[in-house]
Length: 591
Image (tube, rainbow, N blue to C red; front, side, top):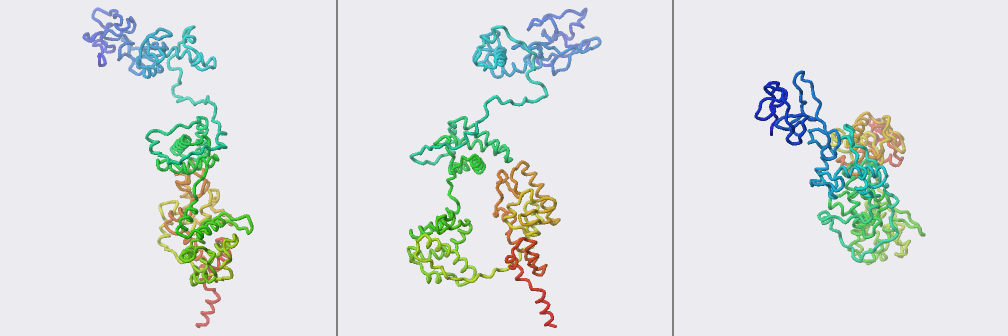
């Protein structure tokens, strides 16, 4: 029968005896009569309908089907339970075709059915010609002997018979997957150190990473080192709050780099990591992991050096050499007499930027800076003001180092004095734009604008602020403690909630973070603050200090205590404020 059988017309409980007969054997006219044996298995028990017993009929009562009730008192009968057809485990029902869960999976994996070479039963066999029961018996014996199953033959494991089981006892219902117990040797993280040798190559050829995506990358030559890297990345990612996607892609990227190394175990060059961005793999997380592990060979050219080489292009060879000497000492300093302290990259770029237009003009008529004299410097300097002071400072830095290294005969900038230019009073800012930043829907922008507009925090202090610096309604700075205004508290609190929702697992201790540095411990950059605010942050700070100077009548001490300024720095803002005594005197003279 293809559909579910109808019920007996008399009792309305059991199915009919045959498809053509509307009565069951218990309600048979002149009966009851004994039902015939099952035409499929020959059983004389639990007859159901159409010549099949409850075990063989597809719609007979099972574990998940309605129970078949007997006539009379209609007492419920127990569900038909029997042994598994393949492994003879007791406890299976008709619901899953009289197979236990293990044998069902075994049949799905191995479709071939035949006579087992070990036990002789006709069941589903694996590639070796053995059934599941024989393999299970061998696994249990190997577990008792603490050996590998492959070290025991099937004939040896089944020589004394086979152990039968209760079905469904290997996994407890409702407990989920059992926790994984590591049985392998943990990765050896001591392998993560550079080898003391390097295999040089004849030609440095660029690698086609897209071809690797299409055809596959070579596997790492050392599986132990690969496992150590895999474990190290996983631990680093967990400590820094990386997402699963970033962790997996970083592990895949390192596996690619290990397979492409010319010297297995050597430090990985940064120039080999950077091209990973072409195939949309993370670069910065990989560089961070390699740096922490001490396996990064940083062969990148700093941006300042690239900028410098671009600026001196086209100059005469001697001038280029002289500027290269100055650039090296200015950036790195010198420990040999005369000694020089290294300068920051911003200072070096500023000094060369002011001096370079004059040096280019000299390069048209002079092949070397040795030919430059005092008159040439005086003739080339701007007439006055801040450009004259800044240009002389740049030239003085260059010629001082060249004279010390005996690359020029004299220092033509000596005894040239330039008055210190007057510092301009900061101009007022656009208050409409500032109000828009304070009331912005972006919590980060509103918090940054509030700290600048109310308390005039320095830019570098904003970048270095950490979560622990904001507590109890106060801001703890290195030089002072600032009680936060109520509008600032509200905006900082809203930003902290946004930060927790967006990056709940980040390990970055800094207060202001974004999606690029949330996976690291580095602070943000001034460029990011300016972009987020939509206006110059320093202008907001200067406007706040200028407003306080006017409100206090130019009280220098109060400006120094409130904003952490020096006396010279405070005078810049008070110079635009009339002294109260002068205003009084002018008023009295008018009267």
